[in-house]
Length: 140
Image: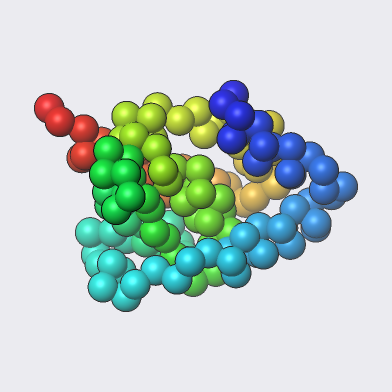
């Protein structure tokens, strides 16, 4: 795992139970930078989610070789997962974002066993959408 994945996993491991972890996800979602309405387009929508989820990648204005992601969701816990993923994927090169080992993080924080199967599918759809958006910035 990369140091940032390790840090996120450590934050979750510090919390004693899933009730506290759900609350932490909700707090991450509440702290997420608001996504401009102009970015909430059909192209940026994660259609495989039951919740309304949008993610959007764009070049970092300070470091154009890296990406920044915006995201939003209409449900608190998934918005927290979106916030976690936005923080994880942002400020990296497109190829680094595509290659992130999100499975290792999800396994370590035991996310799959603590979310419904429907939410699990939706979360992986968010990851795949973010990877596809990052891939679009990699020159052919």
